[in-house]
Image (cartoon, rainbow, N blue to C red):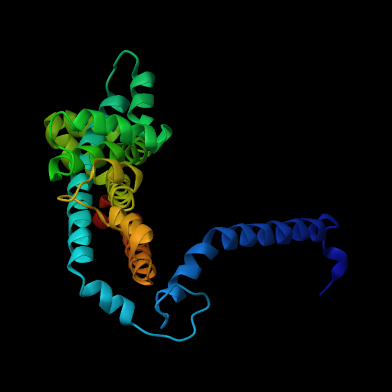
Length: 280
């Protein structure tokens, strides 16, 4: 190899890139390490949480699966997460389309208000929701949780769908309208398939926002309606065992699988041949 042909600036650029890559790896390691520590804790043999574990066992996962209280909280959390995901997707998609396509006065302010649950501290939202739901006797009920978690999930859908709409060519919708399609048919046949990756991503984030939410759930839950995160707080206070680590590991798996599924759907959508390519 002729080293004389290498530009003088290339070694410096490669050195900067190497330093930047090392910094990125260190930041990622710092963010992931607490999560990675929880996983081996869940497989420990001891009756208390220890790291590193003195031995490996699956008894804490078995203890979780055989505990009716844990299973009831898990089922309740999944039910609320799925229900709020559907509600957040419908409301958030409609809001994003209306803000992006409609000529509404103060649309910037409306967009900011739709994102306010992401900006405001969850403790403030929790207190406000409790004060709003308590007089209606919705604290601890499925309806109350669905309303609260749907409100928390809408901003994620608004952000992802708005981003997808910015990358959509409106001339495609105009072409469908010129060909005689109604506005609803043009939306469902042309617009929605094009922005579906954004809709799916928003739905996934809304599901995870509900399933992992702790502060609001702690305020609006009671004995009758208890989420998985509320059960975490109770066991940490009164019954601290490696079952908590086992459930944490399962929650990590659910989050990773869900995000992987969303990425796979988006990748499959981006690699699908277009209508022109099929016709060719």
